[in-house]
Amino acid sequence: MKGLKALILGTALFLGLAIHAWASGWTVNVTVSEGRLFPANIRTDVPFLIDSTYYPSAPATQTVNVLPKITFLTNNSAPPITVGNGTFYSNGTFTGTYTIVTNKAPLTGFNLAVTGFVFELGQIAFTKKVVDLNTGDILFLRSWVISGSSYPGGSDGVFQISGFFGLSRPSSRIQVIETFFLHIDGARTPGTSTASLFIVEQDWVPEPASLLVLSVGLGGLLLRRRRVK
Image 1 (cartoon, rainbow, N blue to C red):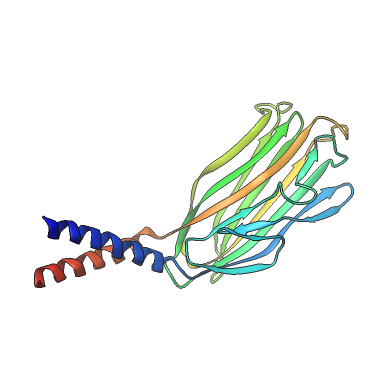
Image 2 (cartoon, rainbow, N blue to C red; image 1 turned 45 degrees about the vertical axis):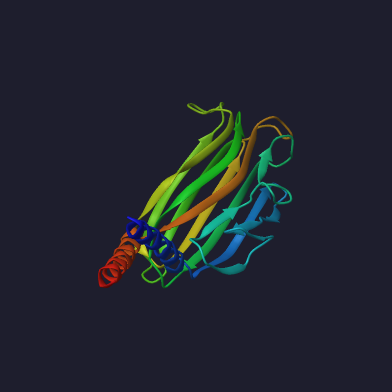
């Protein structure tokens, strides 16, 4: 019984180390992270995180030893990515562009979380596009619209869009382009209508079959070792 427990613990330890090693070596290169606010046409650098490392502006490149996580801190720029809300800004944009390249398990999709605030005539529309760098194929393309209460079906307050989204096929070399457009649809400025983008986060997920094959192989080696003993 003790031998079986030791085998299970050993397998878990080796598997954990193997998954960590298999997931290492992800090179993330953020090339664009900026906002613009109109009608003044003010450009602002948007800070971001690659995993837990903070960067005040793009470009930035980092090779991470865990699965890649990119977080755009759109509420931390100066000024923040906000239109209306007592300011003279009537519309604005945020653009984030980055690549991920690895020789490890290909990526299959991402967990996305977008948080912001809309009020009355405030509205935010955004598109996320993922392209395979080798072939130029579009692996993911989707748009969302979040509206305040002045629009049919809209609602005032803080919103969050979250969920897992898969690519059309796995890829080890991708480019991600996300574009956000914020506006208050001609409402008076300064006024109460508001559109504000707080945070844009994505956690990338590798192909599970590759990790499964690795874990089965390790488990087989450990069992074989136990039989030999």
